[in-house]
Image (cartoon, rainbow, N blue to C red):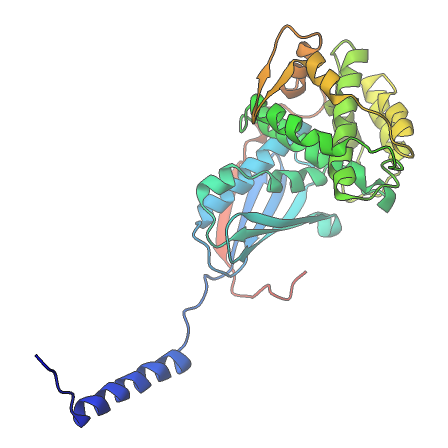
Length: 343
C-alpha cells in the first residue's frame, strides 16, 4: 500500500516543527534547585552548611547526614570539634562522587567541596574527603615548606577517626595503608619532606611520618600514649587552622603531652634528608599481612597490641567524652540570595 502525502499535510508538519523549535528557544528553562542553608550543632560547635544552587539527586537530609558523619568522626578523634564555627559550602557539579575539597582558616573556618549531580547515598557512605578536610581544621597553619604535615595528618587521621566513630573497619584501613603507604617512602634522590614537594611526598610522605610517629610513641611509652594524644594536646593549646605556628612549637606541645621526644627527633631525621623506611618489616611486626586487595591481621605479631590500640576508642583524659559530641540540632531554611559570587 502506498501512502501519498499532500501539500497541506507537509505545511502542517513544518509549522509544528517550527513552533516546537521556537518553544525550545524562547520558553524559560527549568530552574535548578534553589540554594539551601542549614545549621548543625556538634558538641557546642556550629557548622553552617550551604548547598548551592544546582542539580543533585541527593536530598538536603542526605547531605546533612553526610556532614554529620564527618563531623562526628573528627570530634570523636579530637574529643571536640576543632573550631567553634565552620562555614561549609557544597557545590554541585556534573558527574558523580565528591571532589575538589579545600579548607581555609578565614572566617573562623571555611570548607568548599563539590558533590556530583549523579552522586548516590552509597557514594557518600564511602566518602573520605569531607572527613579529610575537617581534620585540616585541627592543626595550626604552617609555612609552605611544612605543607606535608598538614596533608599528612589529614591523610593518616581520617581513617582512624572514622573507625573510632564506628564508620569504618580497621581491616579496611590497614588494607588501604598497605596499598598506599609505600608511595610515601622517600627515594634515594629525595631531599626530605621540607624540600620534596611532589604529591606522593606531601600526602603519603606526611602520612608515613604520622604513622611512624604513632608507632614509635606507643613503643616508647609502653602503649600508654600515641599520636592522638599529641594532636589533641596541640588543638587544646589553641593550635587550630586559624592560628599560625612553627612546626617546632607544635612538636614541643606534642612531645610534652606524650612524655617522649619522638615528634622532634623524627622531624629532624625526615625534614631535610630521605630516611630509609622498611615498611615490609614494620607490617610484619604489626601483624599486617597483605593478601591481594585485603589484609590478614595477626594477633600474635610482636607489635599487634600497638596496631590494635591505634584504632581503638580513645581512653585518655584530654577533651570531652564522646557522648557529648552527638549533634544536638539541625535547623533548615531556604536562602533567596545567590552565592555564586561569594568566596
